[in-house]
Length: 247
Length: 127
Image 1 (tube, rainbow over the protein chains, first blue to last red):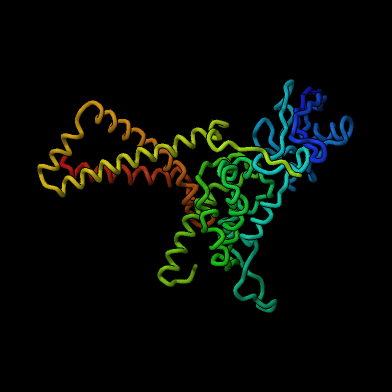
Image 2 (tube, chains in turn purple, green):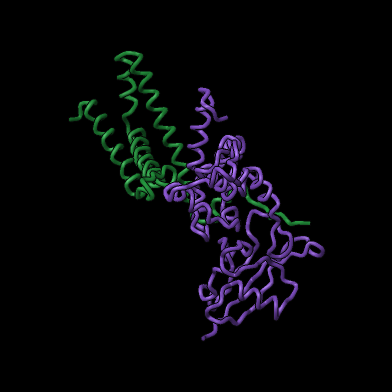
């Protein structure tokens, strides 16, 4: 196996010492099948143990290792070092989030917004166990399945120009989750999500730049979900106007 | 204390090419508004009688106005094409287990656009 030379230029920030972040460079000799996360782990294990970042699964499932690589939000575990061979890769914390320390961002804002859109199945009446399971056809599943692939890595928030400008915007991943449950044939909670989703800081703050879908490492289409939400909330609003349920 | 990176409210769209393209697409709305105003002016003139309508038609001549109309038409075409191309995202159609291909949904918009344009041209006596 051949080796690759790359230089990681990592944004460092220690809240106890630094007034503002600064870059620190680390030349790394990598195996050619390494991901950027492997190179970061090499630095952490052998060069500078103070480097802080989140990671867990190393297989694009946990969504922990989202960082900006040369200005683009990516999962470090899914970014091959060969793409940055013999040059400098600039690693920064996900854009649009406060920096807790080094590459670790404060996610509280997203967690609060995710909770507000009620990302779980809501039933008006629960079925008893004796009544059996909630059946769902393959077609009903297909309707929302791509949205279930979201791993909350927040790459979409880091790419979203609207979230950068309007911090109150609920944003791509949380709204996509609202849409995912609204589309689920087992769910009856669309009206419960309507207030949050239909307000200006909900789907309507999306200007459809489409960057969220471009950067999603799981090939989810949040931009599509948000446009579909705009249509659905409008239909729901008109239904409410003529007294056909909905808010 | 967590560090909040500053975001420029005035130059953010220059940071990435895709942001710039997006803002140019947004900017095309201005030309849609210009065309709408010209259309309202024409409808108002039509209601004002033959002389008023003739003054409206005369107002549409001259190099500056013709240039504006051509630019507005071209930019509005770009506006329409940009939005038609993303209609499959906003209005996916599921048939059974499969989704109808995006090209069919966008193509249907182009077809309606062409048919409506032909009807308007027919009503205007072009054919």
